[in-house]
Length: 464
Ligand code: ADP
Ligand code: ASP
Ligand code: MG
Image (cartoon, rainbow, N blue to C red):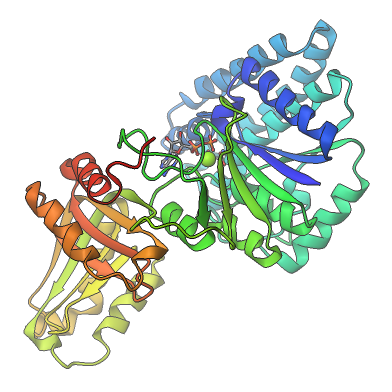
């Protein structure tokens, strides 16, 4: 059995849904499949916007729900040959949409949307779309059943990016898929706590859902179907010369996705490692292309790096002061203070002079981070052991990724001279001792140029 997941761009309207259903049904003739679909492209963003509007008392959220309804209704009208089938499914979806409106109205009344409520609101995108697609597949004559992933994937309560309890989830997944009638059509992205509270697996989380299902049922492979030919050496929207990587190691895939290659959710690789299942990235617009294989046993190549990726909207916090020299415990207090308020540090760098510690976080969290650090280091600031806490915004992190960098001298030299020659200023640098990743921080305005300069320096003439 194999798992096939289709992302938002591949199911954004009736035409696309028909197309990917035929890809899935063709595959099913050769080997039974389990299907995972995302919400239609843009719907999750609209749900978030609706929640934010409701929280601010703006009744505009009703218009957004109406737009979501229209997109689903338009697709339903085109997908079903029998008008009565389209009406029946729309009745089902209307019930869900009424439920959504009620929840949003609740948010409007209490003027608060907690992360828990946000997860509930975001869950509607996948629930609506998978119901629609399951009924459509049935209507083509192949039995199919809708499975709400909240009944089979159990997580903790860290809303927005919940952690999966593998031991509890795997048997539930296996049981549901063993007993389902016809093809299982499973909602991506969503899950629930042991008490049944809705959670989500983080943006792009449907990829992760697919690999969880694959690992639970010992699938022969997991296929992530999207709108590009595979994992590319860089984001093709920013680097014209980016090319498809035929195979990528699990570690490199994790690094690239963590550092912004949204083609795959970083956690997707975790269950596949457990069960040694290969993950394939395939293109619905070009189904016969081989795609990218992500696996533990990939062929070695001679390229210096695997690829480059970038994280937008970063901010740098710099703590500076002569009093930190040899003073133990400052770093640990800094990180604990930030962990306490749930701020994720993406990159850290401390020179061995210990004169300054610099770290990078998301720009939207930076203000809170600085306040927490000022409170934590109040005494050090007062006695001038720490001179200042600086914040620089509008930055970008770029990561150069690749296992082949390990033990290869000259990579950093080449990287920073290429950037220097292009006149790009680097604000901070970090390299993990795994030598699989060199990250550096630049100004946002240099993003595109930096990605292209780095790509050209290492992989310039690889595009075939
Ligand atoms: P889906 O809707 O299928 O989940 P996403 O939009 O989440 O698709 O991810 C696919 C997109 O990721 C591509 O269209 C591409 O623009 C972008 N992308 C960014 N970096 C990379 C990369 N290194 N390789 C491939 N695609 C990338
Ligand atoms: N619909 C969710 C998102 O937009 C999950 C996914 O598409 O994988 O993030
Ligand atoms: Mg995605």
